[in-house]
Image (cartoon, rainbow, N blue to C red; front, side, top):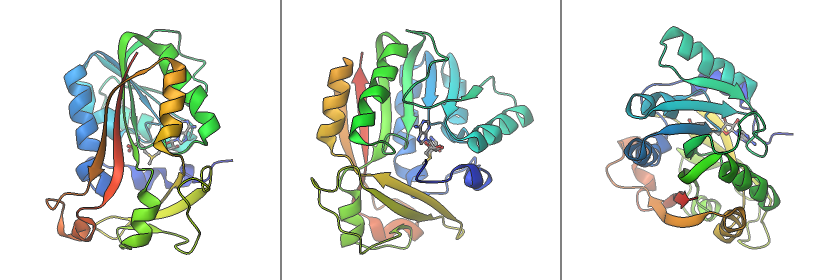
Length: 245
Ligand SMILES: C[S@@+](CC[C@H](N)C(=O)[O-])C[C@H]1O[C@@H](n2cnc3c(N)ncnc32)[C@H](O)[C@@H]1O
């Protein structure tokens, strides 16, 4: 069972200009790096295709997949309305059986890697490693492993814990789900969330899969965000991760 119902939110997610906080500060970093790397790109947990559409003109090809049928329907609808040559299909990051070994140069994932229990991270990174060509890259942004703590300490209407009183312990809460409500500048609300895992859970899983760490960065909200998000300035909310096969 999914913790967040993306099927019923697919239309709300559909966008071509930045709306959520992460559209202003985390996705741009991912998009820039993937366009620098180029080649054949797979967008894992692509949602309705916002990031796929933004990188496709700068790389050889983009294929997106997501486990939400509603999100993929929306992505395909957008592709039909404005064909950019992006292929989409429904699948789970834990087992992308449709994709042969060594098919892609870049495994890109935008804010989907925080939807797994630590024990699920091994198959996720294992599948990513399998479908990447030798020397390929995994480039991802995900929710920071201290986001829940940050939001408890600095409550803000743009990114809110749905159950602010739910206990959080960095080690003991591993595997616990924390629902979050995002509010956009225009007042639209989206349901998201995070299954808590520590960076060491990710490191253990991707090392076991055979990846080497190239770069890992905390993404802190800068003061240049639109006014609506400025209350979160200085707070660490996301993590950038780049791995090499
Ligand atoms: C926050 S949305 C991000 C969508 C898109 N990547 C973006 O940046 O706009 C998270 C997405 O991850 C997808 N997702 C969650 N768990 C997944 C899994 N096990 N396999 C594939 N997709 C998954 C959800 O369905 C959802 O579309």
